[in-house]
Length: 121
Image (cartoon, rainbow, N blue to C red; front, top):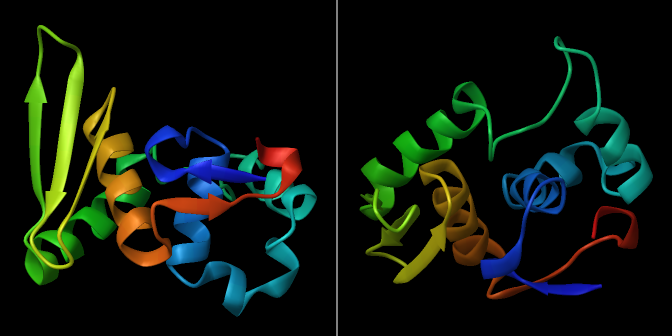
């Protein structure tokens, strides 16, 4: 199912980050929706949640800040965050800085629409 990157939420967002970062290519069995859900729902020692866990999303943000000029902004009153990249020029919004940044990362790597396994949508 195709989903706009701007509308991705977990677990589909986390799958898209995993795919954009090369995880699905390095571990092809994790590319399917069912296999990814096992990792996503895994125990505390083995799970993939870059859109909600700063220990996983933070390094991606650091790399984007250094290499692509990522900027994060928050508007407390609106409960909205923005992430923007200089190169390639992309921007995304979300309810948290991590979600906004991960949407921006996915858009920069996979485009404005992503084909997501049905089990994740």
